[in-house]
Image (cartoon, rainbow, N blue to C red; front, side, top):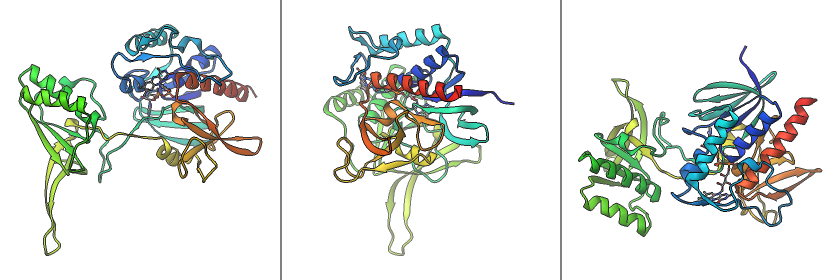
Length: 367
Ligand SMILES: Cc1cc2nc3c(=O)[nH]c(=O)nc-3n(C[C@H](O)[C@H](O)[C@H](O)COP(=O)(O)OP(=O)(O)OC[C@H]3O[C@@H](n4cnc5c(N)ncnc54)[C@H](O)[C@@H]3O)c2cc1C
């Protein structure tokens, strides 16, 4: 029979790692499932290079940092130094982490929960969702487009191949700049196609300047404004491909004519932004509540907030949600009342949530 862990933790950021550390300290068995190449992938992807990490704590917060080991130093260090420290911490504590494991679904079993990921299924008595607030948007096409990358860790991977970057903003432009630079350094003239559903691209001045420089230095870029990803399919050689429509001619007889390009999916990067976790809560059957006029102070009217107990347990039994995933506010059920609870997106909040959840789980498991 497969191992049943006490706790399965989804996400290896500050909240997930703090949960893992506290579980290990209190002799609860656990496993962290992280979709990235390493822990703290969310921070590695979202902080600009050289950004200082502050041990910020809201003024009105009564508690100290409950896991001092993850607290950024008082004299702020760069994100690179903080990440290096975290890697050492994980090794030193020998934390049980599986990387490259993207969470997909939770199934109820008679004796607990099964968490389904891209690297197999794992069983736990409790599940802590700690996947942060930046959930990359999926391409919506007919068929499957799971192989499409969402960011680029190593631009040299795209040397010698025609690459397609989808998205109209700064993050798409940054990816293109990185790939053009890698290609230029080895005199690779294969183009980078830049597709966006809208007719115009929207980048800031500084990014536009860097992109312009790469183009003037010989970068081979082909713009595809008004292009729509349509189909994910497998060709006759078994290669997964993405078909993107680049223009459409409406005919008088009602039969449309269109042009499309088909790229192997492994040559495609989609930088189409991120979304909050509400679609995931919906998929998991976790209840959210829409803010009515005058009820919420932080969230806007109509925005949906996840409903949690004072111990961060969701309406799905045994499934807890903590950290950035429930920021900047959530709906707290306490003593029969439901109120909006402020929850700033900080390392402090993420780590302290972990402390409270592990305390609650310890008590429940001991019973
Ligand atoms: C630019 C920037 C600067 C900031 N500076 C500071 C600062 O100086 N001080 C401070 O206190 N706070 C700062 N913050 C906020 C802080 O980074 C967050 O509050 C904190 O990272 C939240 O931790 P978390 O573990 O909840 O989420 P995250 O750090 O987002 O971690 C979530 C993890 O889950 C993984 N994941 C996501 N989806 C899945 C999935 N489907 N399956 C498996 N794993 C998944 C991600 O790869 C990620 O590693 C900053 C935020 C930003 C964007």
